[in-house]
Length: 352
Image (cartoon, rainbow, N blue to C red):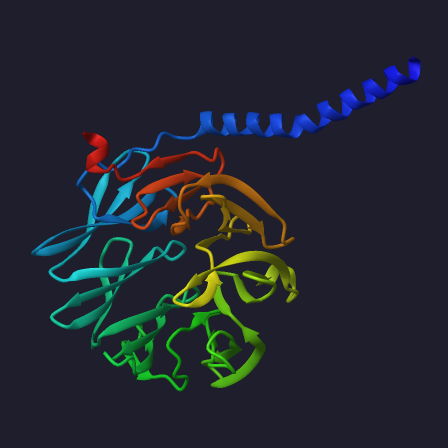
């Protein structure tokens, strides 16, 4: 009888210890929620959509009518708005460098696309117009005066230019590839066409030495952030093998197996963004009829599921890693600490 009691007592202790982390997580989430500042959403009809984070407290958004488009800064915790820029064209792309407090715009008007570089006050630092059907601007996050601009024709022929905005110079690049990703102040990486249309070799190019070097074969996808880059290779089924590299890893790659999506007939990562402050790569995976937002630690490859969302849509993490904008127009904001989601732009239907 004594042995039976000991077995039951041991089982009870195991159950209690297994429940403890879950209870602790709930307690931490509740504390985080109570400590968070209240977010003030934009009123209905006041924004076309959010564009991203200018800093930890401020997002950018656009407002347009038939005669003009405005770019505004909005402080999410007090609801204050400031107009930064106005154009009679259409702002079709906004990139933000929170570290340097600079903004890169693409503006279309009269069959031309202008590349416009602004400081945080909305003052124009550089502007150049291109006759183009489509334009791709790869902005250097280490030196935001440097960019690679690819100009496409209607037949998808293209020319790639190296732009030095500080010197007001634009010249045809020695490397003619449409999509590049900066990995340092002087280097960018890119995929070349491989043996098939799904995979190709990954190259790097140094603009100072004008030297090109092959890095890897058979890469499906490549992207880079400030102090972190990753490649995706085919693995098993519809999964990809992610390889994360950063200076903190001393050149060693950390791998994680993760599901992919089919995009434009090719395999590609789920929507994603990177939190440099926490070293976390945020992405999605299917879960029944919904999607789980997960965080992968790029130093260990270990993943943690955070919350379930109805759709996989673009996300952008705040510089301090506490929040993420979510949605095709970044109309929602997710707390990455309490895992709660709220609207940052209120839809008119929600007001009715």
